[in-house]
Amino acid sequence: MSDAAIFAISLGVTLVGLVISWGAYRRRGAGTGMRGAALSLVPLAAAMTGVTEFFVDLAYAVPLNPSLSVHYDFDAGKGSYTTLGLQHELPSHLTFGTNLFYQSHYYAMTGLVSAEFKISASFPLGGLTVTHSGSYFTTWENGGFRGEAAIPAKWLVAINVAR
Image (cartoon, rainbow, N blue to C red):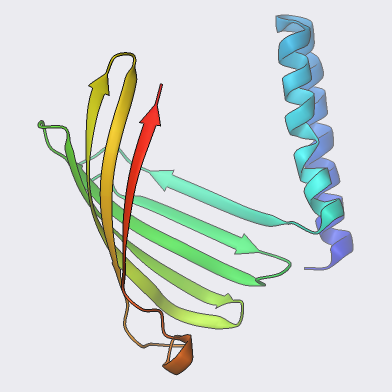
């Protein structure tokens, strides 16, 4: 997509956001209007700095909680990357899940990037929620991910504290 087209789309989205922000200002006050205006300027700022990426995330609250995330990078990556996920929560604060990652011409690479297998546990602690998680990323040689471009298997461990 050309820079002019990206700029035009970003400008249009920014203008629509500013109109909605004006309405929010009139109905809910200056704080809401200012936050809306600030967020409305993000697409235009992204286009002007060359950071343009569009994405769609879908998730459904059904058994296995499937999710699909599709991102397209118009500038540096010039391609898309997609994540398909499944997860299941147990009554004991445990969550099991898996994600499958795929790229299409993203940074000139196409193929299955990796699969993630993860487990996490969340516990309340005072007014906070502490989540400990562990993920194993595995991959195999395919598409553009061969030889030196192959991605080695890795473990990722994280602790998150949220309010």
